[in-house]
Image 1: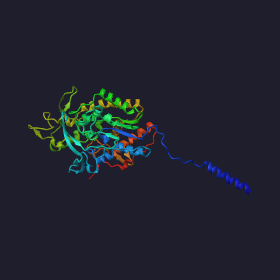
Image 2: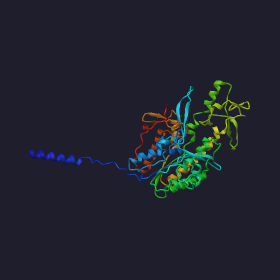
Image 3: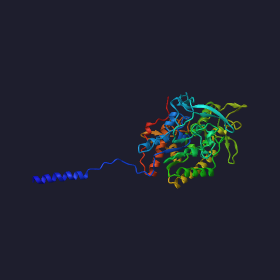
Image 4: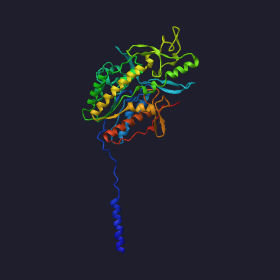
Length: 432
């Protein structure tokens, strides 16, 4: 009996040993290599916010957030063209310093500290020159750049944001954007070029810019993706958002302006705008809710007479087209963005790349809002928490959300396990 007891105990111990769980360290089975990650894009990629490029915005760019998350599973270092602490305000930006008696935000300009001079170029006028950056670089976000600009060897002379990254002073640069961004080998990329090919036209009210030709966009995008993947690098692309979903076009509305005017003069029944006709010509007509007034419209001009005719309240003195993306211009932009996104998705699919559908995401954000960690977010100006004070670019929180959308698409495409960023750790608009 005693021997049986010992045998029983030994057998139980053996069984426990056999059932002991094996503890292993989680490893990623990703088919992508994050050793050197580069980001291509425009102002959104650079971390532009509040109407300027400055240090705090750069530090919270979505590529830098993605890179931090990649680093937790073996990703490499990620360098940006950061302004120094002494030049932290960079190219200048706006800050929220209060609200007026009517509830309108009071914005105060913070002066630029990274301007080294200016240059006058034929056809471009006088442009500022920013302090040069000469260090390592993985974030190739250049505010203002369009997809149609990326092969132009002279482009860096006229865009001060790109000029500050190049070795020579304007007008002595001859390196195209795509050559500059791909000069060193890389293993992974994100690409969000193409926004400005529609956005610049829209924010100018269709007055001082042009939409990039659809065929040119498709050809350039295909060439870009071919270049980025030619040495085996994998990556993620983003589609172009519907520009009409951003607060820049949904804050100072026709209804808000008209209601304000009618408080002082109930007899006023309409605002008049200089609007695009179906044949491409322009003429005055009453504004409707389908016409989008830009955020920067100086509402104080309404009713001020010119030659005895009140501005914006009579067809002989309408609101100028640069302040309005009218209904026909909206339809035109939407048509081009749809075409651009078809080209983006086709190029990405052909190379097996991940796609962050920014068009669908930002449209859903406007229509339905977003709930993250119990915090309700939306696309409203200032209060929404996602868009910065310029109504186009994002807050740190907004950039963290975009980073997570990219990460989700990357993980799904490449079976990787990049952890999502903690969105709650990033602020929205800073209140005084």
